[in-house]
Length: 62
Image (cartoon, rainbow, N blue to C red):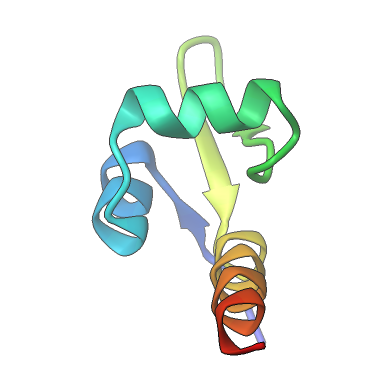
């Protein structure tokens, strides 16, 4: 399986979080860190974001 790279817009849409919330959570190690794609470009591995969502959902079930 190919692990796609999600750009910020895709991550915002997928998680429903704001940009500032994602960056705040990254500072506290509560959200996956992005991968540097270029001088001014970053992206998140789709599997990392999906795993984070799954972990959040599993925490709500208990």
